[in-house]
Each structure stands twice: as structure tokens, then as C-alpha cells.
Amino acid sequence: MCYAIPGKVIEISDKIVTVDYFGEKKKAINELSNLKMGDYIYAQGGYVIKNIAEDEALAILSTWKETFFELQELDLRLSRMDSKKQGIDKKLALILDKSAEDLPVKDSELLYLLSLKKQHELELLFKVSNFLRQKHLGNSCCVHGIIEFSNYCSQDCQYCGISTNNKSLSRFRMSQDEIIDAAYLAVEKHGFKALVLQSGEDPAFSVKDLCKIIAEIKKRSPVLIFISSGEVGFTGLARLYQAGARGILMRFETSNPRIYKELHPKRDLESRIAHLKEAYKLGYLIITGGLIGLPGQTNEDILADIKLTRELNAEMYTFGPFLPHPETPLVKSPPPSVEAVLKTLAVCRIAGDKEAKIVVTTGFETLANRAREQGLIAGANSVMLNVTPEKFSKNYCIYPNRAHSKEAIQKQIDATLKILRNLGRAPTDLGITHG
Ligand code: 5AD
Image 1 (tube, rainbow, N blue to C red):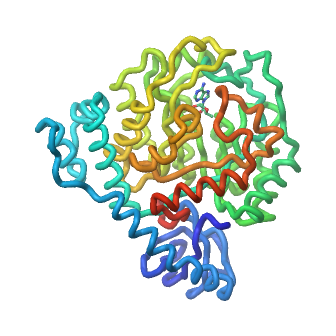
Image 2 (image 1 turned 90 degrees about the horizontal axis):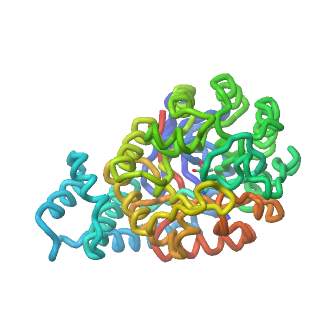
């Protein structure tokens, strides 16, 4: 199964190539040395990942063609907006109209959207964000795989179940070969084109080790790699990029410095933000965002988080619910409501970068059974599947009862494809969003 469809190179201009997908033209960054006009390629996250043989590409495209247009049509139908906005106040109708037309929406208006409570008003908000998703990004849905390779962590984030302070957790560390093999399986057997390598801040993995792992994975299979091991330092970022990493997944967690300090006694917000800015300067694709529902957090904070994510040039926004873990100081703090999460995703779509992806997080899937469907029709267009070997994944308990942590990869893939198909979404990642 593939999570990107082949496209044909129709223009090469230095490092930027134009790729044709059934008549739709998209741009991507090319780092392959031997790419020629007319070649068929896979692209992911705006990067050319792999050159593929013409006959292989044509065979895949012929099985895709009908489905491709069918899915597009279904998505278009589902994301169409109803022009009648009955039963809502004038103020809301105006904000939603401006949003749908990509006109500037004031902070006070975005806060109003975040404060909505009535079901029919929320439904209209989600319709607008879904409409915008379709308008700017079509029906493509990005499917990344994530490998959680160590749950050791030197940090003491007050909400996190793998914090160094949790003495009751059974810790694991995958060997370098196990990580490389898991990545190989995800790419070669399951068809993933983008992988996130995630861990706690584990001193046992030096930057040198991580570089070796990344280089080896890329030597064996073409894949877009995101690193997600916390703050590795500016030099670390540069070395990991050189080794072949092209993306980073690191949330700033909250843009409120007071809450940040309370929850991360050993850290400060500026350093985290500086890392993300440096990563962008180095050329990394940025996946960042915050936690929703932290104690003391207000809608003003959530809006500031969304704006910060935009400022950091995120190509993918990751906003998930805080979930109380029994072995942390925040055990008694309640999680946010499902609606609070959906409203945040919708406002990300309205106030965030038009081209940005928004992921339905595993945290949200843990909070709500139907999170994927609900998130994808409230503005989101991306999912991450857990491709960590099951024997390790069950102990990556950042929060309890994590969705999919005991599910085989193939089962997750089948379930995801079914959801995407029913919504008219294609598991592709076509466009350039960076560079
Ligand atoms: N609830 C929700 N998300 C959590 N994370 C850590 N602990 C929790 C929790 N209790 C998230 C953080 C971190 C990511 C890897 O996991 O946002 O960035």
C-alpha cells in the first residue's frame, strides 16, 4: 500500500521540479542527482523522495485513476457549504463568511469562535473549516508513520507519563538495528513515505548515534525523516540535517511563559522556540503546536498558540488534548472536551497558514472514539500511524490507554484507509509547502 501516488516530472528548474498528477501540477524540492524530465517520482512533504520505473508508475496510476477522481468528487460534495446560516446570530454569520472567503478575521472574532457552545453553531464552524481545507489543499491526506524508539527521558514535564519522575514505568530502548529494521519495514512493506523518529530526551542516544541511524535508514530506503527527540541543540540540529533528516516534530506545548515554566521546571520557552526557529532556518519542515486544556489555560492562550505555530512557519500543526496521567502531578486535572479540541483544529484552519496541514493527534483519538472522522471534517488533513513494534509501543505511555498502541500496523492502515475512503480523502501528499 502506498501513501503517496506517483507523479510525472514535467519541469525542472534547479532544485524545484513541477510534477503532474492527473493534470494537477505541484512543485517539489528535488535532491536526487539523476532526475530527468518525464521521470515518475514519489513526493512527500514537498520533497521528491524516490524515482520509480515508468511501467511500475503507470500500473499504479491506472489502478488509482478512477478512485482518484471518485474520491475528489465525494470530498467536494461533503465539504460543500450550505449558504443558509439559519438560527445563528449576525456576528457569527459575518465571521464565518469572512473566514470562508479568506478575509482577515480579528483576534476578538477568533476568540468568539473558540467560545462557541451551541451544537448547530459548532457544526457551522466545522463546515467552514472543512470547506477551507478542501479549497486550499484538496482531498489529499498526509499519512506519516511514527517510531517511538525510547521511553527514557531526562526531562520532568509535569503532565508527561514518561517523565524522569515516573519511577513505576517500565523503560525500553530499541537498539539501533531494531530502529533501522522498523523503519525498513514501514517503508518497504507498508509503503510509508514519511517517518517520525520519536523518543524522550534519552542521553543514551547521542546526536552521533541519531545521525548514524538516519543515514542508515535513508541508505536502505527512500523516505522523508522527521526527528522528534526534544531539544538537541543548534549544532545537533545542523548535524541531523546533514545526516538526512528533513523535518522536526517538536511542540512548544504552550506559548504562555508562566504555564510553560510551571510545567517544565528545567526548561524555558524561549529556548524551545529558538530551536524551532533555528530548525526552520536550516531548512527543516516544521511540525509544531501545543497542548489543549492545560490547567490555567484560556482561549486567549490557545489563540496565541495557533498564532505562534504560524509564526514558526509550521507546515503541519499538531494540537492535541492534555490527558491526565496517574503517575504525574497533574493526575487530578481534567482533560478538555472533545468540542474544545475540534474548535481548536477549526480555528487553526481559519487563522493558520492556508497551506498548512493539520494532524488529528493520537491524543485526540484517545479522548474520542471518532476523533479521526470528526477531526478530518473540522479542518484536519493528516494522520499519524504508530509503526513502533508492538512489544515496545505499549510502554510509550505519555498518557494512559493510548489509542492504537496495541494494534498491529496493518490493522491501523486498513482502518485508516477505510475512514479516508468514506470521506473522499486520498492518502497522498502532493504539494510543496516550504522552501
Ligand atoms: N497528555 C497529552 N499529551 C501529552 N504529551 C506528553 N504528555 C501528555 C499528556 N499527559 C505530548 C506532549 C509531547 C508529545 C510527545 O506528547 O505534547 O510534545
